[in-house]
Amino acid sequence: MAKKGAISAAVVKRLPRYYRFLGELKKQGVERISSGELSRRMQLTASQIRQDLNCFGGFGQQGYGYHVDELREEIGKILGVDRKFSTIIIGAGNLGRAITTHIHFDTRGCELVGIFDKNDSIIGTSVGEGLSVRHIDELEQFCKERHPVMAVLCIPKAETQQIADTLVHMGVKAFWNFSHYDLSIGYDDILVENVHLGDSLMTLTYGVNVLMPPQ
Ligand code: NAI
Image (tube, rainbow, N blue to C red; front, side):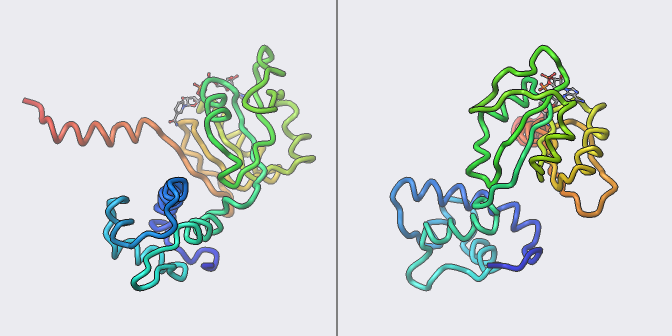
């Protein structure tokens, strides 16, 4: 396995896609795949795939291709999906509930242990499997007991920095940040992954705009 930090950010961005593709191949009962076939399916060049996988030792064999399950497992270890990082969600509104219900945290290295909100009328309501919304006032005590290391932020922009500061203070190390707030925490060792679905949509409208130029 590669040493921590030894893989470039660009390669890391592609690893979840490899992992997902290999999972689909595994489901289809495919045991091994040639680099040519993998590159055709993933619409990457075979040399790109080779370069990516060589970053952590390379798993292909000349004339054999890749062993689907082994490669998937190895990439999974690099991504940490075999871990159980304790994770909480802040904000149990539309987005927080959708994420709780539809993201399979447990197959992605996370254990969802709590969801918090400040709206009294939804405290105690159930979300997803076996979770009920806790009041944000319980957050600090909860963190002292359960030590979450990751937090998903589904709260309005204006609330984000203060909540993030509290969470960092309580030991949270990484944020999956959906609030439209540029979370630039002044701590060196905090990881932030900002998600903007609107940006993804605009990447698509750019393409459509090129395809169908204004008359
Ligand atoms: P929502 O209004 O349904 O839910 C927000 C929830 O956060 C509410 O239940 C509210 O009580 C709670 N909340 C507010 N301040 C809080 C605090 N300090 N502590 C605990 N809970 C708090 O809104 P929705 O639709 O769930 O969206 C949430 C946020 O995510 C919004 O800021 C929205 O703009 C953003 N968003 C971002 C997307 C993205 O692609 N990044 C996509 C959709 C929404």
